Figure (cartoon, rainbow, N blue to C red):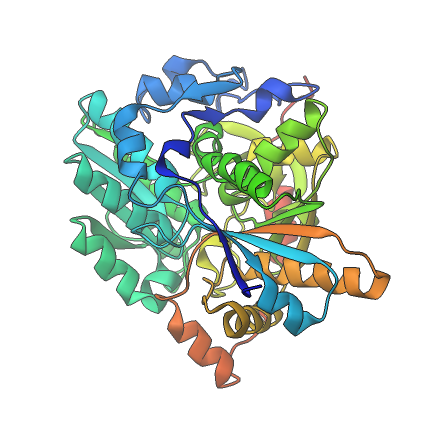
Length: 455
């Protein structure tokens, strides 16, 4: 039998609907609150930032929401994405476990992010919007929004976390190639950015800061809306095409995962792979262990508090209940820039509180080590963010080896690392450091969480 086993669905099997986990949960997630009144927000409260079609998806409790045909037509460029059996990796690890990975790096932007960028651009264009502001960490989301904006003739402004802006010039070039404008955040273009720079002229930036800048611009301009690449319910909803396809591909393999793994920063790619399997479980199907793998330098689920908090550093967004390190927390500048977010998706956080998933955290050096093992076995170089999922899968495979268990592991290979080779150069030269967050700064950030009365 060939070592390379590829499970590829026909184009006709691109999902026709997105899946909404909320419909199958035993209890609904906590309400989103207005930052001033602490009362639940309504659709009109979100209208300055999002078109109404996305707002209605955000608050929907329906199990399935139809994917518009123009979106599915663009999806055809890379969907259905392939799933592989990692036989060479299994041999390298000498594990009895079976390892599968769903590969999202085949998209034009090289990651899972276009799965939501395209529908967000579509719904904005449908509402007559011509400008979108957004943020990006490592650049995968900014690249994807730029790509989608080009398809729908929308001007895209991207605020890129400064440490990643400096580390990843080719991501900036990719955004500019698609027609977007990219700015290092914190910038002098917004009140939020100027205030941060006044306090710390050398600030490395954070996703919380970049979100504040993008939200500020959108809120102050009637012709501009804001797009978010993770965290929110409608973003997670769009990503469920990943897991829905994977369920069908596991059927092709005559197998089913015991363990489903994804890296986790804001939660969208993890939700994309895991939520359809968790939904099947909640409807009486086979149980799975869902494992979210986060960076040890920004560990919202393993170290943060489950509390109401702002989604941004400037405190411009509504309050959501999530695992958070505090909206003012600025993590150290490690290479998995897309995972440098102070909070976790409220829906992922709620699912964790319900016991539907677990979280682990690893430093970047062992994650890069795992990625090199994977690359030399399977021939794909993972993005630094994705390396956390690879590390999680290898850890579970080695546990199976120790325990003599032939479990089935599925993980989401959410993006390739072709724009991240400087990080691999640092790893091979021995210069890559495992950076720890400042305990005092974390304590200070958590002490400033909003005081919200229990509902």
